[in-house]
Length: 170
Image (cartoon, rainbow, N blue to C red):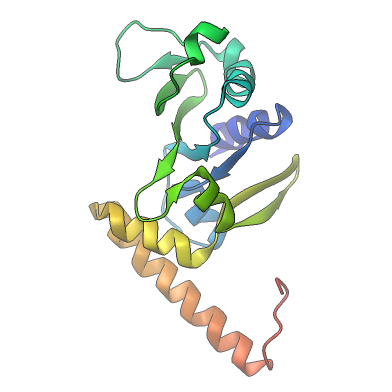
């Protein structure tokens, strides 16, 4: 997880416009599963993709889907944005332009909440939307995560009712 935190720190410091959407987001909500990558949904315009590439330039980024293909940090490389499955010296970063069950970056952003981290703030999918995205993916580990996320959601609602609504996040 340390390396994943470092990858996230680099995204924040490079001012990449992104939302954490996968296992790391689930862990931030309280899921106890281990994740091996950082999944983000990001704005797929040239300026943002250049910031993304700059954030990882010294980590030898390479596309996982194309063996031997390194990620270039130049305008030509980002003219036709698409998803990028990237392997770096610190681990995997999956950069998506849309999330199944949610939509494009603007939809994802609209369903995100701010997360305060030691190195700065970033956004993660809100609990309800993360559940919807994980249900849409419907992989074995997503189904396990959904069970935990629903329990976290149930406990949160029970706690809010017990304290008369108005939780710390409102």
